[in-house]
Amino acid sequence: MKTISATLLAFIFAFAFVACENNNYDDGYAFDDWDDDSDELVDQDEFGNTFSDAGYYDDWDLDNDEFIDEDEWQSGVTNNFDGYDYDTYGEFSDWDTDNDNLLDEDELVIGNFTVWDTDRDGNIEVAEYEEWSATDDQY
Ligand SMILES: [Ca+2]
Ligand SMILES: [Ca+2]
Ligand SMILES: [Ca+2]
Ligand SMILES: [Ca+2]
Image 1 (cartoon, rainbow, N blue to C red):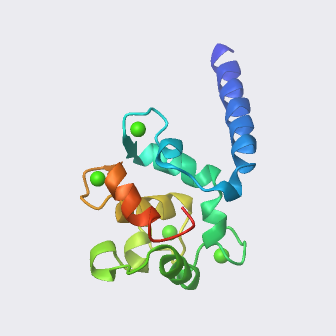
Image 2: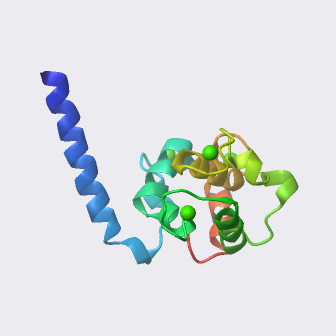
Image 3: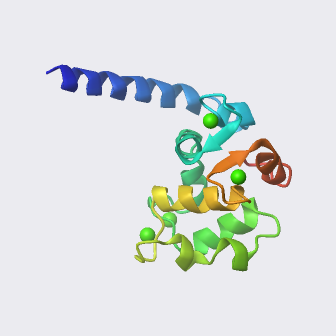
């Protein structure tokens, strides 16, 4: 019983948090907003949380069918990453790790994280964040 109520509480909290974050949808996000534990690093969990809360998946999903196909991925990459390097960051098939020809939210988060984490050490540092946030208006 204790586990259930704790889970429920976590759910309610998460829901309230998401609802609150959505109010800031158009304001853009600073590095500190992504770095939940303020250790000057954004790990993949922190990245995924803010990516979801900000509704970026919906931005990539142009026809709102809850999946991202190759055309939508192409548009997203072009719009978000000025000078995207396909050799370095991968083709659609590299992002689509389960090979179903669609990107779910996890695949989109990991793909984006990999692009941002330029030195591939598993954390986005401030310099890496600024590298991409300087070249686009969205993130
Ligand atoms: Ca952190
Ligand atoms: Ca879609
Ligand atoms: Ca997939
Ligand atoms: Ca890094």
